[in-house]
Image (cartoon, rainbow, N blue to C red; front, side, top):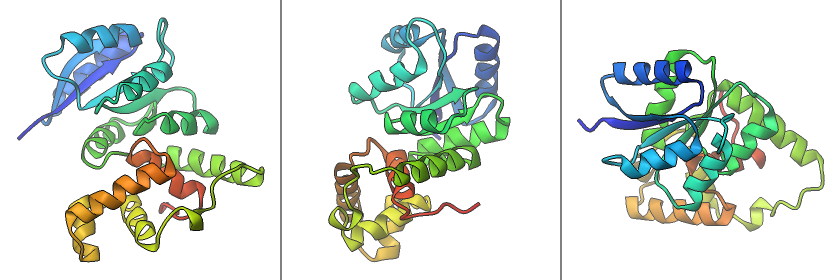
Length: 222
């Protein structure tokens, strides 16, 4: 079984080391390195034997913080899936880092089981949205919808088939499962998913879920 390769960036050494020990204790995880900030992360990334599948990034770090590191990883078209960790729980901040390409956002005092689940879900499905993030995204979407934002009308953006696939993506079905449910090929699903990413200007699956919530196309169960 291939292990999920994880890298960490946090300037608080005790927290970073403790988080590293937690990752090492999970049988299907492999810890690649622990960095002290964004710049250190990029240096260690160059020297790593393989890129991480998932990166756990603290938002507040000197030199280069997690927000800028997340942006830089996605500007470089990295396949690394990012989980942001922070004590800041403001709705706009959470929404912004998801817009920037993060696959999940967790409070630094989250339960360890939630963290482990997030790493696995992000690796397997491309996103993980817990109740904290869901509330933030929903509130931010409502606030945006109250103001005259220039969001492109959904009915001009998505076909009925694309809406069906977006709904199933939000319900955490993978491409193979979606193909079986809709009686189409996996390649067709992949094509529709790519079209959704392009039409919605989303960086990844988490961005598609954010788009669906913003436009009230999907309401995640509580």
